[in-house]
Image 1 (cartoon, rainbow, N blue to C red):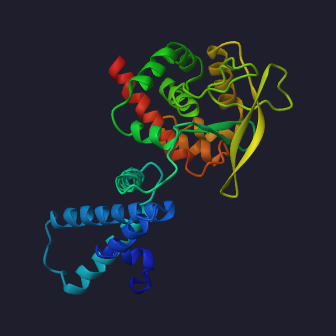
Image 2 (cartoon, helix red, strand yellow):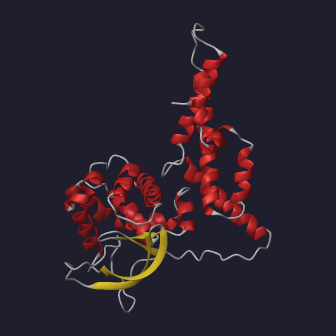
Image 3 (cartoon, rainbow, N blue to C red):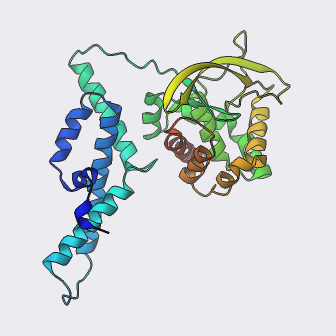
Amino acid sequence: MSYGSISNAQALAADAQSLGNLKMEAGKNSPAAIKETAKQFESLFMRELMKSMREATMKSGLLDSAGGDLGTDLLDQQFAVQMSGQPGGLSDMIALQLTRQMAGATKESGSATAGSTGAQSTTGKLGKLSVGETAPSTISKATRTPTENQSSFVKKHSQIASEIEKATGIPAGFMLGQAGHETGWGKHEIKVKGGNASHNLFGIKAGASWTGKVAEVTTTEFVDGSPQKRVARFRAYDSYADAFKDYARLISESPRYAKARAQTGSAQAFASGLQKAGYATDPEYAAKLSRAINTTLQIRRAQA
């Protein structure tokens, strides 16, 4: 490993002053700049953490030198950069906080911006599923104290989720978190023609093999990273219990989700496994889903 070949991004992690420029760019409300700023703050935090751990370790004094200390510091810097920016990590929380701060500053200055309505769009998937993308306001709430609506949603579906867990081994909290994320915690469920509920909590699409009822809705699918509006057909069920059973059958029987099924010990690993298997086209899906699952687990502990 060459210490002289540190990239610009790695250099930023070692220079706190350079974060000022990044934050100025973030102030322009650029998602890319906000994401990069958050990553660099996380890098600095990780580097300081490793530095504190090394300082707490006793040194022999035999091989210590200024050159050795410099090499160790540069190595820690590279490790800090490599570990930062992971889905569901500290940088995601920092990015959300920066976004809220920038939005608040814009509102106070009287700038005219298009506000979020809190509505939920349905994000397209590769294959059979279409995952709902929770609005930013809902995501930020999920990182704090659960809302009354979230708690009510979890309580409403906990019994059937627990029954499905006993039958399939898929954690009830994971299913409830995904259903909550898909539907905006019940506020934005897919409707059939006429406005009745489709009971489709998981956004499963109606493929050629589906012979049951369907609901046609406009979705937002990510194609090569760009969102596109499309009309898609989704499965409709007679009850929420049928929706849970169908979802569990798909996850349990489809070979493409085998790795995700083997990672139910971790919300983040399970969510990442689904994304890697092509469950969703949203590039941020794993991070959003893991937050929703962790919120659900928190609620279920409180309701136990």
